[in-house]
Image (cartoon, rainbow, N blue to C red):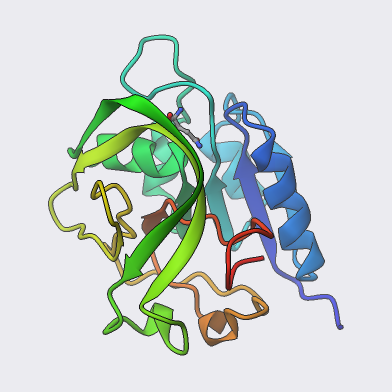
Length: 199
Ligand SMILES: NC(=O)CC[C@H](N)C(=O)O
């Protein structure tokens, strides 16, 4: 496979999954770099990434001690993907509500996709995802909407906001996503091997 010139920056908020994510992106022949939350938007801009991933964390976004990125990253003209905690950060930043479900969930769950969206072209409507969380997105921010629904709790918004396209070289089994979309949050761990149709 030919290496692409693309570069993805992953902000590490403390979960070991962020290292897995970094490696998985590299396996797609896309350069990826894991950086601490203290990195500034200016520093990221100078790295000229094609996309930014806000990674997972054991912390909860609504506490004081939770790590936060430089809010100016949201002003950069770079697509952002939020995974888990990253999704919750985006939700909170844009005025949605994240709360505590008071029950930790760890393992495989069934999720239902909005099949009208091209992101899910060629994939079954019902799928499984690997989850590890205690919090949920209770209310999506204005302009965002849920694209993946957990059967029990609606905590899987893959939210569309702006037409900023993030292009990975290819995503095996998600090859339709040569165009992975926009500015969005995703709680669906496509990079975890145990996720059917994920990787
Ligand atoms: N996987 C995660 O990033 C979890 C985020 C957050 N700590 C939660 O419990 O929901």
